[in-house]
Image 1 (cartoon, rainbow, N blue to C red):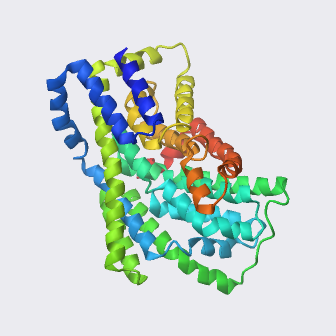
Image 2 (image 1 turned 30 degrees about the vertical axis):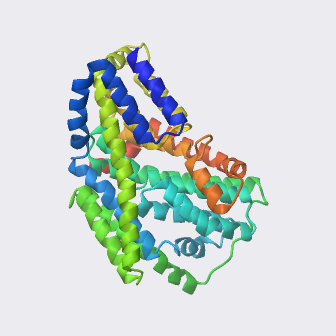
Image 3 (image 1 turned 135 degrees about the vertical axis):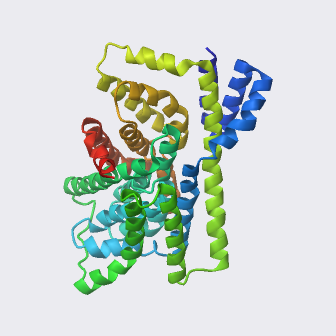
Length: 427
């Protein structure tokens, strides 16, 4: 009963827009006070938060965020969309395809879906509308392309899942590469179908000379090189994910210096933004561990796991029901909150049923991506609406076809787990 009451309180706090970390922490502390009393609760608060953030693996998060900030301030992302448009803009709808391609490349260095959506909205949405693209298509493709940062390594969300689920960070990051590229391909296919069905949705492409195409590669090469180095180091086992993150941060700084954008002002802003984002994430980690300790004290997790595993259903049907729950939660909750609150409960069930925890994490995060472009929360939609000065309804409407594209990939990964596990098995 106490678990139900505290869970309802937590949901209420989140719906009231209390910051996720403080909502989780408040619910966890109240639950501990009711369950074990004041003295033991103070003991938990003295030890659990510090031990929660003492893991070396967690250092990968601020380092990857710092890498993204350095790349952002280097100006390398400003020409990303234009470079992609020159390379593939000749075909009808080429600028929309370029937005997807730019989103995939940006995802490789940003790790943040909302940051990717905001940057793409500023650089591409207005240009697409000016070229004659349908406003809904323009906004929808940009909001959807931003979700790629949740999957393509180095994804902050993947690292967060790996730490929460206690899976190898490097394996989890590499496992997201093929699914992330599949999502990008699905978005591109969705653009093609939309253009074919609605003939006025996109104009004819603008041809470019080979000289212009070669010139455009200059805008893509630094970021792609940084991505290959960071992911390659992890894949080949040369470094851990944390060490690769440090190399990536150094690479971002070198790129910032090489592009002549290094100033003390930019450097301070990059550090400040990195610290701010890292504190937010680490606070969620600490709060989730306190709440998790409350759940452990109640002993409810093994009871739920045993009762669900005893159901007269096929294991895949049970996991499918859990996955459906994640899809629904994504409509209402922040992705990190979903992972921190539910994975400690659902993962033991999934493992008891014989499923791989890394595969489960990829499926969970793909389903979480859908929540970024669906009402009522739809963070990417709000970001694009604000940046592109478009009504929320138009952006949500434009995103609907891409929801089904991402969902199709999630279903494929659910049916064929080897798609996810193939690359990690080669490491």
